[in-house]
Amino acid sequence: MSVLFAIALTTGILSGIWGWVSISLGLLTWAGFLGCTTYFASPVDGVKGLGLSILTNLSGVFWAVVIIELSSVMNLEVLGYVVTAAVSFMMCIQAKKSWLSFIPGTFIGSCATFAADGNWKLVIPSLLVGALFGYLMKASGLWLHALQRKKSEQPGSIVTS
Image 1 (cartoon, rainbow, N blue to C red):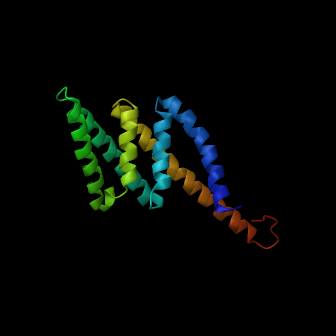
Image 2 (tube, rainbow, N blue to C red):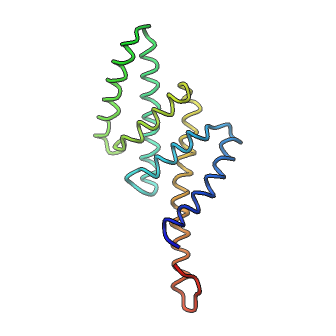
Image 3 (cartoon, rainbow, N blue to C red):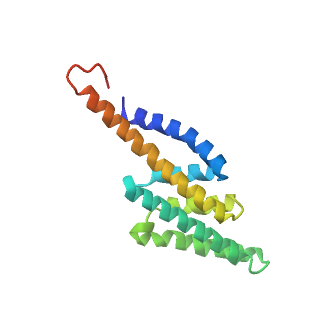
């Protein structure tokens, strides 16, 4: 069994479970998949990658709320564009800090907030649990692959790669 197959298998199983969990908890299923996607796309694996994914997603939620709030100060459409430009700059420049260095994670968190009409109280737990599921999907796939490989290396084993 290849690493890709093992991760695909555990991702498929846990995606179905996530669908059920998200509906049961009243979370946004699609936003959870964005959190999961952030983890899979993160340049860092493991718990450190999970932390990076969560922190950048949360910063994106924060920046989206800033855009929403500042844009509503005046009923002037151009103000919204100026605020968006300034905040987008901040979303990128914050990557100077290593713990906020995954710029796509920031934009994913921001986009999720806009897609949920600014409902950050629902977006945050959806992204958090989704990122955790992403971590579990990959970690369990790697575990499964290692387990299968170990069994195939034992004398007299009939398991093949």
